[in-house]
Image (cartoon, rainbow, N blue to C red; front, top):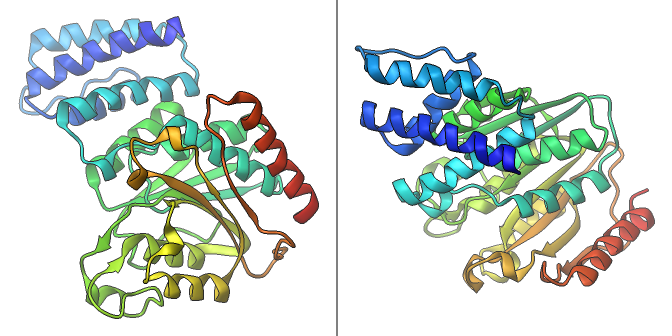
Length: 334
């Protein structure tokens, strides 16, 4: 951890220098710093900026950073620290903030249990944001034996997509990112897995979603419902969708359309409420929704995986709950 902290301090110095000299947001300074490091310390110079004095300081900092020999996972953590500061400095809105590591680890844990270790595995995040969830899942799956993964990310926010792209390049993750509205026809290939921390709220353009079965009869439609439907279309037969959704997903009057889509296209395999102590209040609590697309080797589990993760501080109960997940997989999916 000491190496990560030392590296981050140097990284932070470089970001601070760029932000002040270029007069840009903290996020933009992070992106440019990461891109420069991914290019071997080459500086991007436009209209004489950064200034000569700052260039010399940055070159020296980049040389020092190169000597740290950071692993991809360590670099991911550094970027995470930088984005935490960006949240405070730029006052980033909630839907633009990264998915916490703890949630990413739980997503990967469940995903690793249900997936067959294929020689090739394509994974899509349909609302990729900063890419933290996707990169967390990638590193954990790689450590668990998945060798040939290809990642794809879609987002309509070009700043967040730039962060995700920079982060992947710096970590040498094989990923492609697409700047588009995920409600439009996706240009990504069909994938084995869709994993996403879905944005929650209403989709503003009613006429674009009239062909979605999850669109509202009146007024705006829930964007998280639309994205589940879109994700199922992007899966190969038997592929898995694992989504972070509101804890009360099926408790609203708009639920019928979503339930119809799930019944028509996928097997409802499970829904697990995440630990309450991960969230600031009841309204922000989330759950993991596990779906498997019809076809291929897909089959409905005899017993749907339903439950509540214990609080993280209750280590014995938490470990026991993970064992219950393992048992469920062995009894229902193997």
